[in-house]
Length: 92
Image (cartoon, rainbow, N blue to C red; front, side):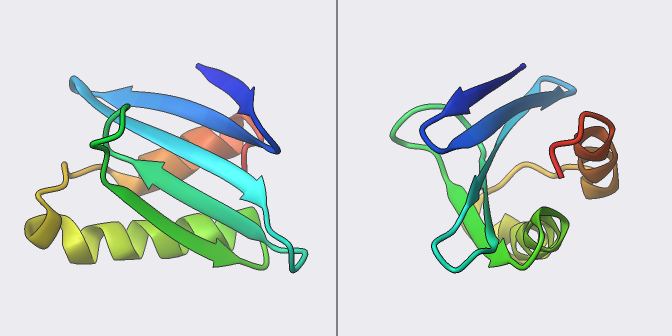
């Protein structure tokens, strides 16, 4: 599912019963901010990164997510598949 939220868009993804919400917005510097949420609600863990392009910001998010998986008890995701899905729907 995808929908607008404020100045950006939210893409709700699910894989093997695990959910990932990806929020994409432009930033004040003319770049992009991508924030990945591991669940919906106020208790969600959020990994946010910015980049010159949406793809660059998502790549940074994926690397940060993987680096912090153990420390923050994050679900494992196939970030290549996440990127492919978001490319297919022109989210990045």
